[in-house]
Length: 319
Length: 288
Image 1 (cartoon, one colour):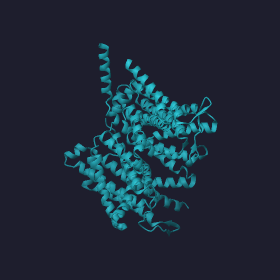
Image 2: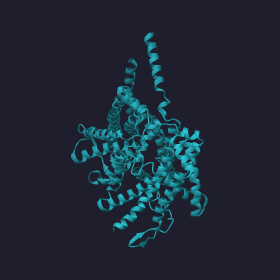
Image 3: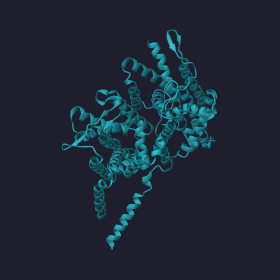
Image 4: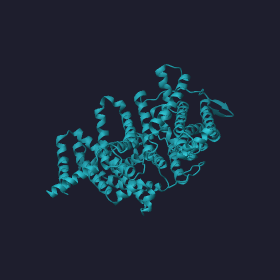
């Protein structure tokens, strides 16, 4: 317990220290990492932990981003209200999509969620009266208490705490009965069902959770990039999110952060090889799924770390 | 008007059928769904161009070299990727084939550039008149090749010993190897055959669509066709493909061209929910 307090204090201190140490552009990058990792976290829940393959994540992101932006542009609903509101609606859509898992699994689930993404993207292109069609639409600025947030530093104070909060919720959920049920469903649906778990509700809930996180991520992404373009939300983008999750580690919420950090910073290091960037990402995905399907997070043995921490605590208690 | 529409819709459908045939072949033969197949079709067409650049060969010899090269590619995909993953969870296999498609697409984007390339028609693209309906030989070639491939594969699966051993190997690997079928040899040849089909499809389709790294999106239409016809049925793939082409063209002509693609993806979801075995497929029972 003492250790947890120390970590929390350190974390909060770091949170306030970082804006003093880094330039505005870096803070913007941190925001991008936070938002993307939130989106990938949704994928970690549904595909990694609950074992239901989803190629629908970028559709949820699109619905979250466009939904909040359209509410703000056409009906004047402020973004701070619109984003969570839309996220709840998108979570409902995710739940309904998840109910399909009653009849659909494996390859067919991958195909249906893929088709869902394609339909949402086409709908955004063709509903040009509200979405701006293929050209896209600008996102109104995010205003809070009459002040509009736009610089990297201002957005940092908004986005990072929200992300941290949602991560804490998910990590706790993962260590609770719900998380264990998800893992049981991944390992054997039949065994889980035999234990009296209503697997359909749980699978649908996993989809709802991933849709919620995707939509919140989408709303925050919209604020960050200030312009929405339907081309950003296709099947390629879904595979990109999946690649982040796989490289980071599909089974662990921390994997989402690790993977996103790699994928956001790698282009910086490969600046002279911009044309090969997509190829590098593809090869990384292929290499990790074949050689290390549990991703980078599995290199850091969290269980082992816990043991070390517990042991040292017991010793410190004993001494 | 309707006759002309149907004639051109059959062409579009034959393109989907050709892609669907490859999917169904791999799925029927090895139990894997190749999510990167659309990209492999694109890769096949590019392969001809790449070989022409590297060796300076004229078009037709380059096509033949490309067909051999793609057979080797299929062999390499199976032995380098799918065979090591044969006991991996389904999720890992799905992501691996997605990754394979991404690598192919991004390789083409990096090596050949993101822009479209022109690709020659195999037959003339100028139309001729048949009883008031305009037909294009290049398009008829697509229809002809997909029907010919269907007959060939049908013959292979139903009438040859090799075909029986493929079905046996997919049905029960242990059982098949006990009676002397080389399972990895069978799977290897399936991947080679499917890769050659991908290249054939790519070469036929590239001049009709636009040859760019994004052409692989045709793969989703191939999925719809395969699902519609039945994911385990070769005849179903062709029927599903043609049917999809007809539905799309009719929707595009009489309802709205914006709805065309959305309806075909909607069909995918609907068929999966209502009749997962497709129109001509046989429902497989899941065993515990």
